[in-house]
Length: 222
Length: 222
Image (cartoon, rainbow over all chains, first blue to last red; front, top):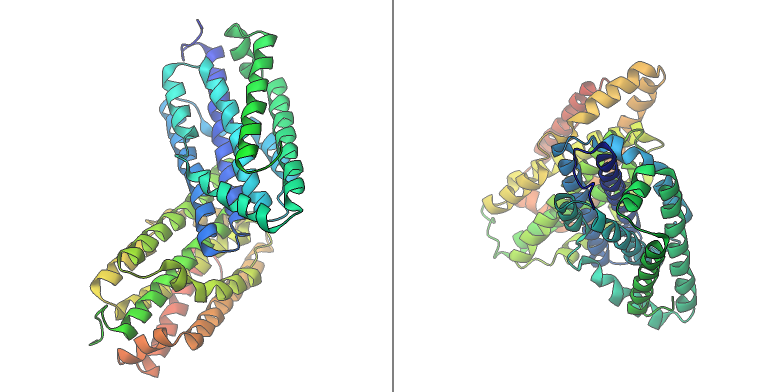
């Protein structure tokens, strides 16, 4: 990893892309989770989901501050990702509270795993701000109990939510691929770091493995 | 104001009502502002509106913590206000970004003025946590410039938004009245503090005066 100097324009563009996609992902996750919290059947659950949304917002502001501090314009960095995120959220609009919960847990989990994979290729400073933005301190864990309870009371929920989880994975990967194709700086980061196709394949295997573990935690087939 | 001891069950019920309505109002404002931020035409405006939403959430959690610290169950305290707030937001769903902005500025302004009026009748400790929850540190001021710009570029916006502001005032007052009729502890707080009908009238005059000032700041007729 020779090109990990923020002075190098190619590397700098890759960092801007990475922080931009992460920041905008958290801003839209904030909005979607806030919207979905309105579907919660109890005040306590509404409050938990709102808290999850709020954490995304706080992490978003930390990333924006970091970008400004490093001379990266946050709006320019986020702009390329407006359309892919709109497409993802449009195509994965939850039909009810439990689908919203599974999306918050599973969809967000896939995205964060992807950013964690990418953070291996950046400098220590950038990796550290990314790690901070990716740590929800187990705040999403309340989802597990609620989904498992829903499975107990609704016999058809298991099959439906298993399909929903597969759909979330598919849509997330398809948007990630669209982004990778569009954004040369991100691809250059991988190529410049000497990553070959085999390693990209292993990365995808890890992403789907982690997805299966998350689904299993919810009591769902992946 | 003899009955300002939190040990007195009647007074305690009034405080629970007041903190409950304020907390739930901020939780729903958080959700609505987050939803409406999705209508923003630029990333910068989306971010500003999300920031406004976030402040409501932070203030909500402070109120919840305060209630718990004083042996008031937040969910029980908020429960009576779920229906009136749902009705208010259902009846004032913005048809676009600028309507959402005016609602955030004007609707939130009316609600906060009302809570400020009520805070005169409670003990110092409760008044102080309320004051903290009502202070947005001028964060909503960005709305003024955006609405004034919208008025410059759209000749029909002025009349439409003036009507919208009147509608927001009407709906807010009508829900406030419904709450006052339903919630004996809140009425008892006013009556027990020796407030007569004339003073209630003056309070409403102050609320509508402040509303007119806010509308004027936006460049709108009230």
